[in-house]
Image 1: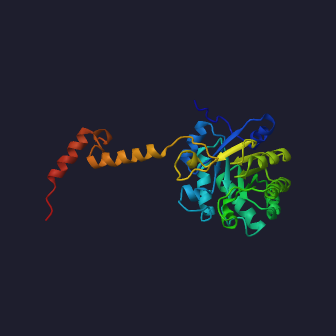
Image 2: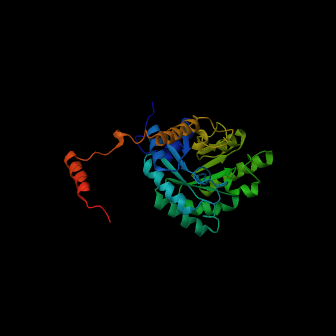
Image 3: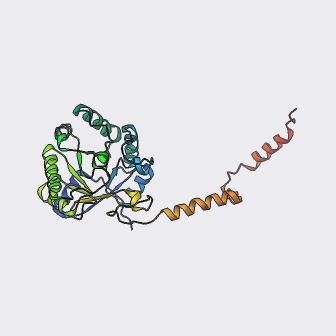
Length: 290
């Protein structure tokens, strides 16, 4: 049976996973209704990812999604799951122009949504930006490894850390981001050896997204796990397959409307008998139009 979240899950709860060995589950979420169900299911951490560009808006990449859109859906998730730890994702272009732009937009995200942390896909050259955000009191999630916002530079959605040199670079970046003040690090699509090294050599929580079992928390795109996307990444477990039941339900509705079985009498609103009689009588008394 699901165990709903009965109290607020905090950054300190995530930090304690380093010492307790507990593994923390995280799912992506993009709307109020799903957030409410996830809180009732006991999901402690929700990522409002810019992957909404793909699974909600239908774009081929995460690049087109706007900051206004991300703020709107992050606020919706916050309202649906007040006890969950909610991470808002900063979209492409919202923090790249300058440190000042980053601080303004990140602070806007936090103020207008009530999210607990903000995720940014970062490079080593953005260490000063992460430091400025940490100085402003923002819990920053530094996203390393496969960074979908850099798909043009990477040449596609390929796992990172394929060579010893690349692996060392990812580890060095993780250490750099911790030194800059990142509250946690997200590693996407990297071999487990890299994640293990990052876990061993850092002191902040490490979130894995296809990064092996050493990470303190794991996140997947919910639609991938539910069978609602055309292609499921190899690291995503099959939670269930909702695509078939949903198609069947939609088809059944179409059929019920087409055959006239819906709407039926039980779906109608009923007027008080006297009012119904008076209304019908009034129709008969009206003069026919010329």
